[in-house]
Length: 526
Image 1 (cartoon, rainbow, N blue to C red):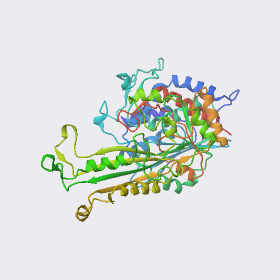
Image 2 (cartoon, helix red, strand yellow; image 1 turned 30 degrees about the horizontal axis):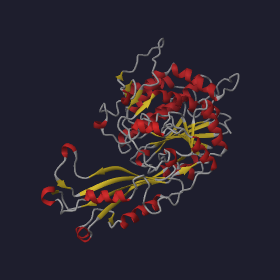
Image 3 (cartoon, rainbow, N blue to C red; image 1 turned 120 degrees about the vertical axis):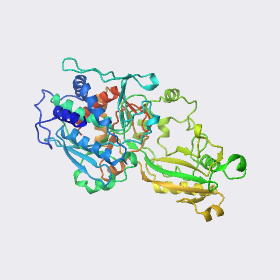
Image 4 (cartoon, rainbow, N blue to C red; image 1 turned 180 degrees about the vertical axis):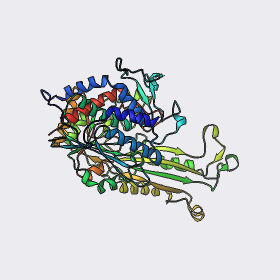
């Protein structure tokens, strides 16, 4: 079935042009403004919604966990077909035993500038039991979000005489429906719309599509440096991340880095009966709880010494952009159903400018139906630290280790030996994740930054939010090392359950994303 669908898609998109160069379309009477480009793309989309959704659904149906080598390779193969169908010269930059970086190149005659589009095609691990439909890789179309009672429906009927119509509020539920497969499809559909409307690209286009981002991008820097000759460009745009929580389009100029580690505390060598040994055998759950509580105040301030010392502050332009951002914190609190945020009264967007400390998971023995009356033998917390500009992941990790030692715990990097257990009353095994990297930030005052803001604002009727920083982490520090300025232009809905079960994409955001990307490809110049 997949081979048949691939053949159909290839037939639909096949161009009678050389693979490396898009043809020069007939001249339009007048160059279109970004808002006019957006309108023509909208008209094209309304007659091609079914084709776009079916291509996205086919892509989403391929499991894409980075460690699943067989399926991640299938994703890369699918991407090659999708890119080559648009006349994009495509290469696989291989990584031993992992998903390759898919590189694409589309040269435009007489273009003065080159743009790289970055996204990733791998997704977060899944627990099918936690998904409403139980099948994270079988895309499900719903009439609205699950929170709003959305009902599952089949894809609507489509014919040449009566094109299928997809409601803007409908959603596709599947892993990577928002993070990051839909931005890739939106960009390719934008290319289709421009070509169909004879709107020429104003810039050369390159694509860097990664298959390990959700695993920390452990090989991306090495691979890109080895192929540095392919990456000559004036700017990079990443489609990763959601739009602003107000629902408005977003342009952002920085992201946070990330540091991950696990802390395990220990009690007896095995779990013990809580009646026979409670009050006597040390409980590692309490040891861990006390340690975690010592790291953060009730209002959310991190108490680790030196935690905020290395922050590079925002400049005046960035502060002005931050102050102009919408304040919808009260709406978010109501939607997310909690009464008091952390931060001592600061806005969400202000707090994102600081490093954060987060407990992303806790485990000690069993709960629920599996709960047992035991004193656990160990307890584990998985932690992530989001870093801001100026902070080094290794230095931050040393600050964490110093704090743990100050709480009286003996630190080891492996399970403690018998001798260590008997010698130290409190032990913490601290294991640093292999993936960690610094934050990155592009100046908002560069000519390309100002030009991009103008194009996106013109294409969206001035509705876009301009932010100095996105809260999430994307490995943009690599492109900063390569001296390529980068800017974020995400398109997916903010309530997309990114990194969680029931990940979804609101179709109206996909459509608007097509318009924004098309306007950038047609009109970005400085």
